[in-house]
Length: 233
Image 1 (cartoon, rainbow, N blue to C red):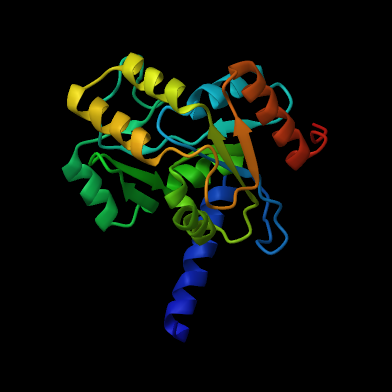
Image 2 (cartoon, rainbow, N blue to C red; image 1 turned 45 degrees about the vertical axis):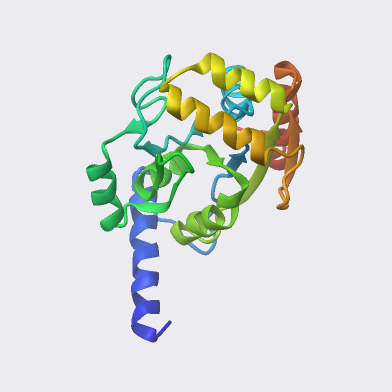
């Protein structure tokens, strides 16, 4: 990286930092000493229980400020999903437009053709309010997502979590969730071929979520261990 690129990178970082801290009226912050809120990135197979564990934790949590990061998706909404809470559902053309203009700090395409994007501005807004929980997808996304978050602000603390449950339960859940039959079959075939009880990559925490209440409790204990006593208000 030459000096011009380094200068632009520093300028971009400072600009984003000003956007984030502008929500605090009449205050000025030093980037080098600013205490960022925490980002938890949760990985696992489709149907592994990631969303159920996260939703359960957020419903029960009364201890820490948390927001759920919402991804930009090209797939159709599933039964029970809704716009904004479950995802920003967009057409392929708009997704490509956002990619070209570098709105995403990370994006990837799944084996079934669906694309997922992680919007930088959305992360900036959420992390200014509190801690953030983010779905990471499969373990192959770990390196790219870590780099992506750090490309927004390189001193954001990150904890990675992998959630899993028995293969048979995952397949049953995919079948119950429904959707386009061809896509459902692709997801089931992927699990049949690729499922392992533990990931190959290293994660900070591993949660076995065969029992949902125990999975939620494990996530709560993990959050308490990483965040410590809640800050006085």
